Image (cartoon, rainbow, N blue to C red):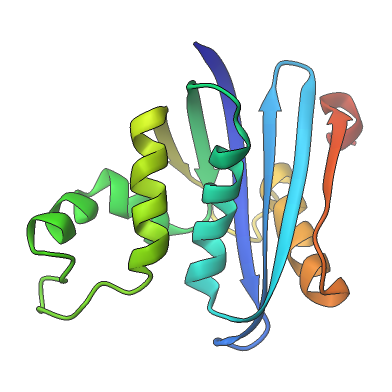
Length: 158
């Protein structure tokens, strides 16, 4: 099973407002940088899309170490939120409908295909890959378009 690092971030100009997501997939000496844009969205949706897009880009089941600055996304997996929401018919502990259920369902499907581990990093704290993802997500908002490029990992660590 291939081992991959997936770095992700999401951004929103206003919340809701125009948003961007980004991810960087790193496998060995290869990296793939991706980002996307949505005209009307929320920051949480963009955080989810960064992870979803990275996992959907994988061609075969992989061991994926996901690095994110989103406690919303990470904690859903590591703190049992997803299991609770599903057990409660996609309702929160306060009986409210779970927001972004459409994206959570996509992510649940992807989780069954891959072996995921999670790492939280503080945003805007100088973590090089998190800073790169943040820049790509903000550029997607500014350009109203995303990117999909391949690089050598040495190129992106400069």
